[in-house]
Length: 153
Image (cartoon, rainbow, N blue to C red; front, side, top):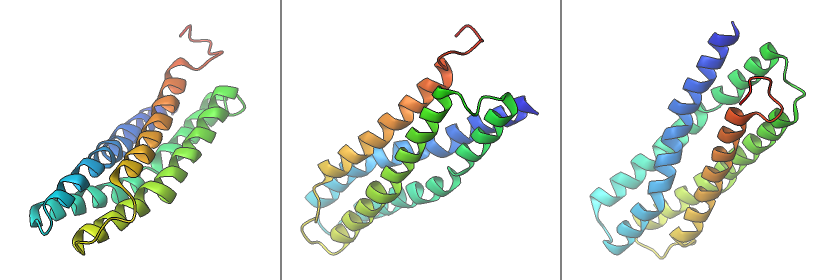
């Protein structure tokens, strides 16, 4: 059962977090292009698609910690420092995504559609997206390295 849970956890991370990471990373540059060409239907459609991808896969991404906790329980490592750190960083990454990235994407999309000056510069969104990506990268490294692990890694 542990191997099944771990497989689902890893697949969920790849299939859910990967698209959010890519779409969120592409959003600021696409916003700058849309602001440079006001009224462009293609640019607005790209922004809508990127934002929808982020929202949908963020919701699907809930499976990652769910299966991660089930895997950790199965392995008996729920009290390990590396896992507790990973859980805290995952919660922080989720907060950055839900409280900063997604609302700012929505606001920038509204501003582009209304052809008005953006409330926040796309560079600020890029910074929040970079923070989100850095947090997930750190969690991934912790999952692979697992300090104190008996696997010899």
